[in-house]
Image (cartoon, rainbow, N blue to C red):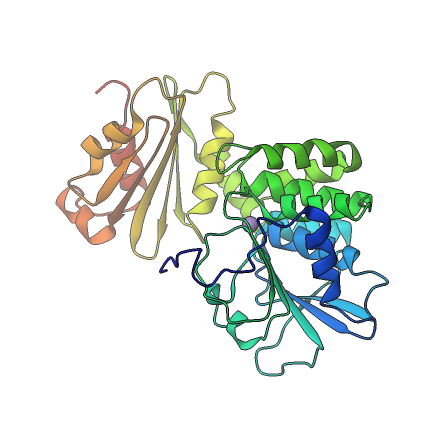
Length: 341
Ligand SMILES: [Mn+2]
């Protein structure tokens, strides 16, 4: 995406007006008879921002609908919507409904062709500015902010609205996911918003949302991994044959690393004609280097100190295996990544 210099299209870009003026200006764009649509690409930050805006517009407009441009896939987010009963609807590309005003939060029209269909009354976001905006919409884009949830927490404070437990929980989760628990893109405003929201959120629900990354279907791979595990000194191996996604290998590799005697968790499976090997370790030896030495000549292999992965086309296994049976693959991996080499 091309970056556009902020000074060109951005006369009304907000940074110099006060928080009270920004809120007033935002409100001035709506009429009590309006039916408002908020469009989101539904990640936690976008969902939380939309809920906060819906709350800000409560009693100010006739109705506010939060419309998703795609279904939610991530299990954590599905859990959030289910447990907190969030009022989200899926927009239909072919049957656009009529709304008086449309707002975009946590994104810009150029981020998705679905967004580009709408004529926006307001855009509130924290991504780098990639759009040039024609005259018109209320803009509040703050690329230095870690999350749009932070921006909306400030709006709620300015409006003297204490967020409900549901809204506080989603905003807190939005800040946490977009800053990866303050490990990236964090400024003081994010931490201040977090501190403000912390006592207002439901931490039991937040914890349930954060740990909900498994489906029922995944459980049978846990079962298989436990049954098939081979332990060689402090390394645990499990080969799972065909798997539906590589994510399940990662989740199981991380799970076995919880066992206190295990320093290396090496989980493998077959996906779309490739053998995938996922390593999680305590980082005492360079896992990326070791997996590259073991499998780099057969496919792509590498990673970091404590996380590594190899992807090997099954056809390439002919070079080292007479017949790539499940048992032969399992033994190959165990030999090549054995601590005794
Ligand atoms: Mn965001």
